[in-house]
Length: 423
Ligand code: DLL
Image (cartoon, rainbow, N blue to C red):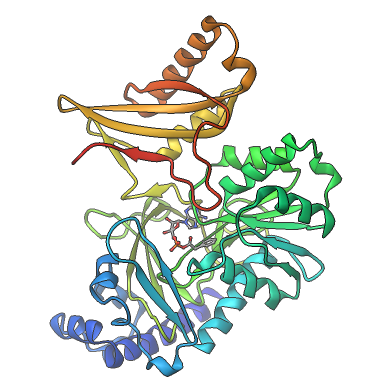
């Protein structure tokens, strides 16, 4: 589709979304009235900037069903995200929403090179989290053979992978590494498996982590992105070029804004992703502030797809740590650790405040051999990591080496940061 036709389609879909929320959702009706927005007058995509934002707190304030735009009898599925603070947020889907969701996830799978000949092992949690069911229905829509194993029980995952000749693995990138390490412990050579591709998402990861997964599992690891508030997985995904995620722009309108001024950043600059749904019936979202940081990649992709790409998520505005006044993203620390030989891909960041001074400690798992090696070698390793982190982050960081497998593992989204400061 040409850009012009796509923009026309987006405009028409946006108009009907505005009509839907303006007539059926009191929250938006009130906001539109306050801002004197007459959606009948909405003539151009540029008018988007006049629309109000929606934030997570708005979902909480309207818990559980206040933002639904259809009567309960038209809702056929409910998901929820647990959230780290406060109330959970609840989202709903009509039958048509589920159909679109399946199509969009099938699109992400196809982009990553998966076909109906693949055997897909879905090791995301099934339940209120959108990862399991989202990928499941998309994979069925594609016609692949789906193994709905859910997360956990890693040895069994590997057994099934061997016996059922799994070709595609779907889970969080951190769980993919746990599977890889467990495989190594079990003495299984990944090249004896049929696995060839991985679709990973739901948490931030780095390019270095991709290389590690590729090397350890002998696959091509691809990234896919989504969030429950606007649907779940299926919003954007990488093609086989593995160089940015194509956004399904026929269903979502994405803006990248400066999180402070809320004005658009220059094309290609980093900012906060703001998403407006274009086809959602049960739970439409207008200008939802994701808090995720990324940049759009304006150049065309070698694969030939015309949907704009976004770069992998660099972090969130709210997991941005401010340490001694310096902005630090956990992903920067991960990048450094992955570049250092002898460290395991598991780490934790602990932040404390002593006498009004922030102290950051990075616990790093190191290979067994180093841990039991001479003190001198360990000290050298600590100094080396410290120096690399200091130059990457611009602040001093304490480093502690820990034995392999001492840090807590997660089968779902991993918890990398423990902030003990009472701010
Ligand atoms: O994590 C949906 C999903 C499931 C996406 C499976 C991909 C695969 P939530 O639980 O609502 O939904 O969490 C959404 O997770 O705002 C990001 O901060 C983060 N996130 C999701 N995908 C990625 C990714 C699902 N590929 C929040 N890279 C989002 C980095 C991601 N962060």
